[in-house]
Image 1 (cartoon, helix red, strand yellow):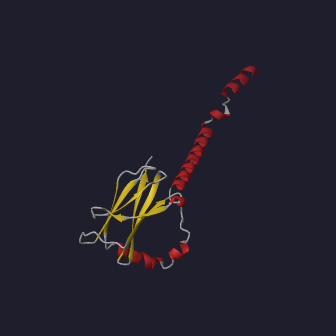
Image 2 (cartoon, helix red, strand yellow):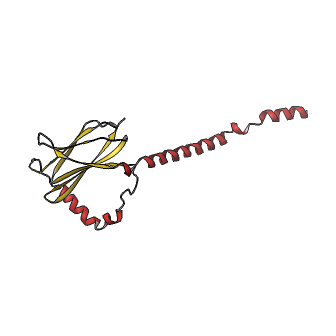
Image 3 (cartoon, rainbow, N blue to C red):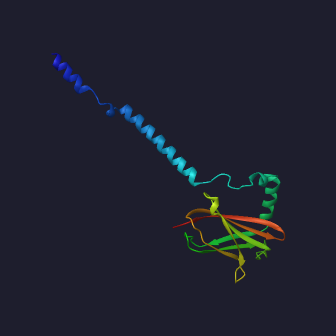
Amino acid sequence: MSTINSNSAASNKQHWYKSPLLLGWLFLVMTAMAGTIYMVIQANSGFPGLVVDDFYERGQNYEENIHKKIADNEKWDTEFTISAVHQNKPVTINFTIKDKAGVLSPVEKITLFAYRLSDAKQDFSVPMTLAEDKTNYQATMTFVSKGKWDLLASAVIDGIEVNYAKRIFVKD
């Protein structure tokens, strides 16, 4: 009789790795780890934080400066015209800046800055020139890394500096 009881007890014993409770907890822990890894990857591929060396000086009188810049920027209508951008291939970037009457605004100086979101060491700038047909300003750039870039057209018009930005994606 004791042999029958010991055999039935051994056959009812469940292995630890087949426990539904353990498998549920293991699934929950693995899901949390996968979510954490995903969030870390997203954080490292996006906004890098403060990449400007003189952030404190730039922040002085910030509120006054930002309201003045917004008012200055609203005086002109702007448009970026960019074809598909590929890594290590030159691309011409056109920038149109017109007054409210629709006339191309003459600028004293205009520079196009390219900012790499994840690596400030790759940032560069080029001067823009008036196109041959005199309808816009243009610059030719070559991007060495694929991914997100911010373009900033900085123009000086009648002694006022205005800035206009555009985010682009560089493909393989």
